[in-house]
Image (cartoon, rainbow, N blue to C red):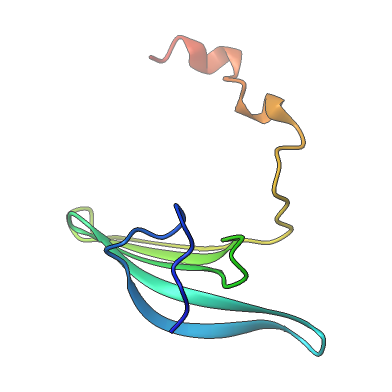
Length: 95
């Protein structure tokens, strides 16, 4: 069983399984963890290399009867354009 990356996967997470992403010599092993928070069941898949690169995630919300799935592509470990976090003018008065 793989080691949980520090700060990436909580200690309460349960290892589910591993996937191989890519092919040939360009492969990344991703480990999937079950993370339960209140009434939400999350499956988080992150790279096994210790960098905790997010690869995929699925969340099942029981109270809202909602399912969310995400596949992460073109990941870079930095923010190229911090302005993406700027609140648009039309939204500033919404709070």
